[in-house]
Length: 222
Image 1: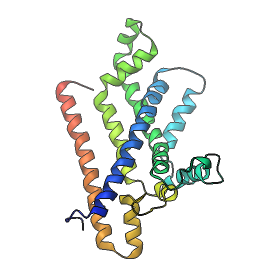
Image 2: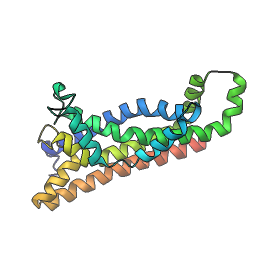
Image 3: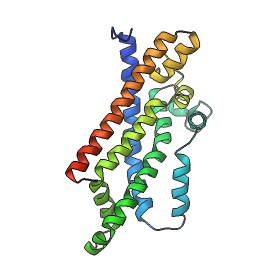
Image 4: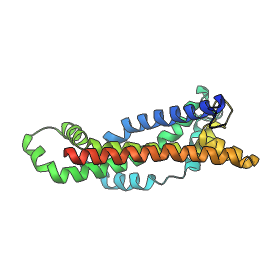
């Protein structure tokens, strides 16, 4: 089935990539400036926020799935939008899981860069906003690694997307939920094949992180 590029399997893989890439893109737009702001700005509660971001990196996916389910179910405050058991619901759940990871890791990247370039940036007398943008750009190799780490988490997620997506064939069925379904049906060959495919994608992501890091080191980019 995998070797023959079965159309059903191709659609499952395509939906997995579509959901995860969209979620990570949205999470990056939120998490990168949030992490940089927590690193550079000083305001009451910033320390608590940093601790909270670190703690939320290990959010249980089923808890996130349950929260999103309660929000978008028919009886929930956002039930009128009809998002339950749609790819959009799965994207929302993955965004909630990935934002803390990207924000917390970005904060650490910016803190490290600030130790190196803080004095120079202060001498330029630019605002904190421009400092954030400068540090994120200067550390773009590390920032990209952070984003890819978030993508790895999103690709491997199963609990939350199962709850809010429902694992509906041709609608919300992705690789991880298919593995869970086929395992419960005793179709271990297909489940194992999908697992190997998912592992291959994960290896590609980590290989990309490694190659980018090496290339950046050779070019003197953080």
